[in-house]
Image (cartoon, rainbow, N blue to C red; front, side):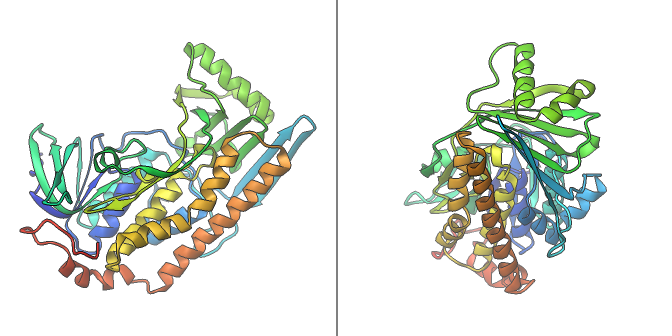
Length: 413
């Protein structure tokens, strides 16, 4: 089937079609805006991910109808989270049942091949033009330097110029959009954990299991296809040396921090190879400017040891879409994002140091739980303004956005 050429102009162009970009495209297309969202990767490809969705993320997916798709794909419904704390004096396990609230009675940890595809299909259903195998080459700029679109190489290899009122970078922690607009971090984390993870068959777990021991961390997360994602975190890289040496290092971390899991690993089968994330300091970047915005890891990245990246991405996609729908300055997006991020960011960075004793990290986890409660309250409050808040304002918003002959948003954005 021949793909229709990319149009020459849209209201919004989104660079990156994974969870942050696809969710943003879905929300904006639901307003009736002309949205192009594209990704250099093929649809359904895997990516490095913590998988775990926290309650605020599940709340959003339920409201968007995506959680039903996760159920259809056989994604495990996680009813319990366990924190296992170990030191030289022994281990202490704390089990937390997921209590039904606001329509959420379970958590999920979907493979990205499932979650990203579901969001892409939802964006396409809302009318977004979704493209894969398209690479951004550069940004277009109007007089005065305002971003006015993108230059891409399309699926057929042709170079195209695409005008847009707003370009959104959802292209990950090493965002090209952020680089081209000069969006620099104004908050940096001080610590970074390296992580090795793999998908194991024949290793069932009852809910999410998070393991913490001074100097190391680990986890076991039930995901699609009856598999369990097992990860190990340390302050330095696990990626050095041969595959056998890396597996040995992984097993040693699991044995030290999660001995009950280590006992069962020999009877499990690793699908493929271990995968590695070498570690990167967390950051909050300037998330908007003249004609551009950032969402997902492009604008805000937390250390993977606290497994909050997807939750942040979906939450911020919702905040950005609501800001645009309300016709507010994108400064309001930054304010709302940072209000829900800065305290969690600081506590997450302390956990990522792996330099704590058990009472201290337990206190950090309580603080993070409180911040997730604030996130959930904010989502509920925003929806409480009217379940049709985005849709009822779409006609007003469209008068502020450009027609094909224009290339800039209203001065309010």
